[in-house]
Image (cartoon, rainbow, N blue to C red):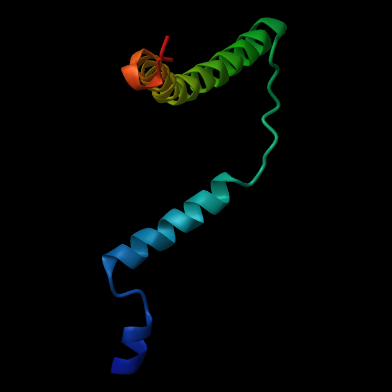
Length: 93
């Protein structure tokens, strides 16, 4: 094996780790039958947990979006109230 051939192999430990991670992830995605039974209690619990996680994520996103929007509406309302109370907009009797 010459000097050129040795350089073509995975020389760095990072590339070996990356190669191993890719092989592991490809093998873990391979479907295999588990031959397991999920009863109605476990199935309903899993579905309920999944729905709770989805609702929590939705509530968090809605909360993060709603608070700045609510602040913007409050500022706009305060500006309109301040403009309507200013003397330049009052009609002269």
